[in-house]
Length: 134
Ligand code: THU
Image (cartoon, rainbow, N blue to C red; front, side, top):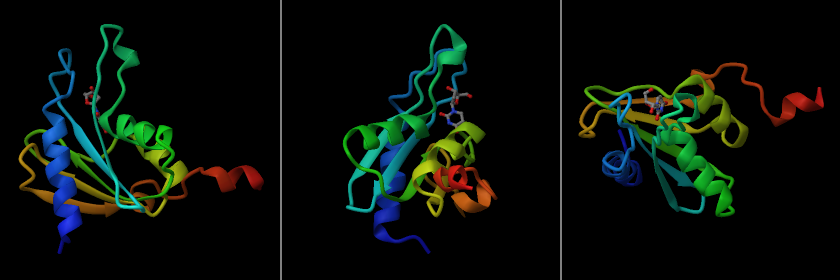
């Protein structure tokens, strides 16, 4: 069901998850974002003693990509703990800005259990750039 590129993406998400800075929640997350030009941008969650300043893995990956000049994406793999987890609402919104049709691959810390969804299904009727034109 998954192609080679997507399996590679899962491996990268599992790998970068180990670099998560999560001393408060102890919940490590890794994300790997595949751009249309074939590059992979990886991110982990980075927590802070001022808890609300924590940034999720998905947004770290996205902001890295955009700041490197990449704005078109095909898929993201997200690696969580014991089982796959879906991206939080804030990350869904931030990803929707650039890639409403994004394929979202969710997996556990070992990349074994896998769920696949579309961002547009996880965030139906999302508010995006086009919404400002109405
Ligand atoms: N977290 C993510 O990195 N991505 C998500 O989509 C959900 C939550 C992080 C934030 C925090 O560091 C920890 O997981 C627990 O919420």
